[in-house]
Length: 240
Image (cartoon, rainbow, N blue to C red):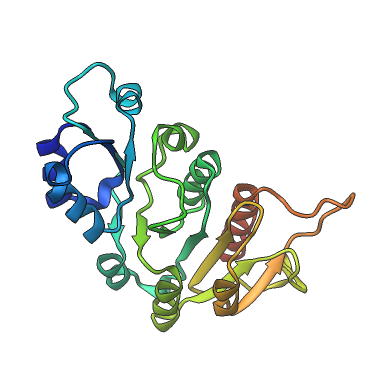
């Protein structure tokens, strides 16, 4: 999306879909004051870039010095979603702690839909956006399961626990194998980011941690693969 009025209107009407804003360097501060104010209010990154960058993004149009990147899918608000969940049905939700690779994100969304997950929770920052690559990798399944975006992931995990969820983290240092644990409960599966895994404070909030056996000295599986294995193990146990 480009142009001052369209971007400003989007920020006022539905800021949750705005991922990032680029503004042309050298514009007077008052030129985009309202857009900057709304970006700051909703914690949306606003970056000054050369005019060529804007042209690369949207082509030879009258961009008026501002371009915004919008999510390809609508997010669900955590406060609206949580009261609708019936924990007696033993729902499974996937909680993503910093998945930045869009292909991984798309694969996890496809897994969530296939395994019947109740939702996928993502943090507002440090998380891959729902863009065209995510939509393609998910093979059109993005949107079948609510994508719930939260401002503070750890606070939302505490709310899940208060609502009756047990929190299980994927961690290759865990003492227990995934299929040695009873997963027949309202379950939140925390999947850490590529490389670094879960943040320490998030790990400490988990009720238990599980891992998968690895041969040939392999340290860990891809985050999307790990999420799929555990989501389907939880499904298998429910259907046994």
